[in-house]
Structures are given as C-alpha cells and as structure tokens.
Length: 183
Image (cartoon, rainbow, N blue to C red; front, side, top):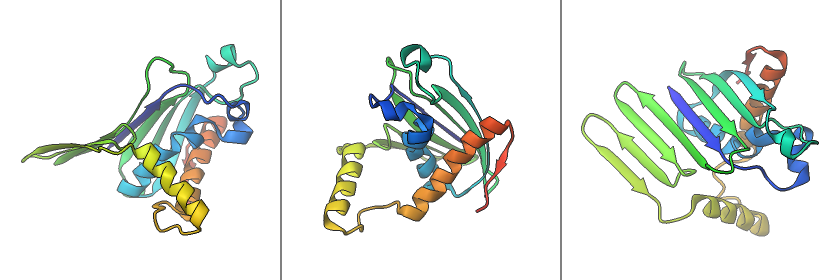
C-alpha cells in the first residue's frame, strides 16, 4: 500500500490559480509525488478522485483550481494507494510518501530529503545534506543551458505518463467515475 500527501500554500502567480493554465496543485506540485510513486512502485492502473473548492475562492475569487484533493489509485502490480493534497495550507507545509509491505516500510519525506527504510532486522534513516529541490532545479537549468540531459532522471516520456495520471484524476472527479489508464 502507498500513502502520499503534499500540503502547502498557493503559488503567487495569477495564471497558476487557473486550472486550464496550470493543471492545479496536483499537476504542478504533487506531480513530484505521483512521479516518484511511478518510479519506485510501477505504473498506475486506474484512478478515482474528488476535489474541493471551498477556501481558495475566498482569497482569490477568480481561482478555478481546487484547494484540496483526495486521489485513490491502483497500480499495475495490484498495489493500492492514496494521495491527499492541498494548496491552501499556509501554516503547515509537508510532503511524504509511505510504502507499506508485509515485510518492509519505506518513507520519503521533505521531497526526498529524509528516507527511512525499516524491516525485521533494522531501521535506517538517512537525511541528505543537499536540498533536493535545489538540486533538481539546478540539474534542469543546467540541462537546458547545455543541451545535455544526462542528469535528468525523468524524461519527457515519464513526464507524459505522470501528467496522464494527474489529468485522469481531474477527469475522474468531473465524471464521478474511476478512470482506467492505458499503460
């Protein structure tokens, strides 16, 4: 089983608050959790989601993005999971992905800065000295500037697969139906 979440404040750019321009918090920020789930646990099979529009419009009346969402999914392997997310949490910022198995537990928190791995014999927690977000942004900027993409771990094909998942989640909410993903 997989459990992921990402909570934080909203982006200041006006275009970001428009669903048709940014894809909302799920496609913009939570895409990193969705992508890491794919990278570590495999492809998504289906998705079912609900989104709320309760708070963001009180601050930004023109906003069309959701202020929070609950996404349930299954993977091709049969594993199940959830992602919860919100972009209106100014007092608590956090991201984490947890993988639960009968003989292991893995947690990635702080956008991958802290990794904990537990099994019957040990528990190991490693905290990176580097800022993962800075390193990720730096690798991207260097790849664009140099034209060399060898430090990019997620190429366009991977990005398209993750985007397909986030867009399917929004379609699921609109249709009030589970969306099957063709992988």
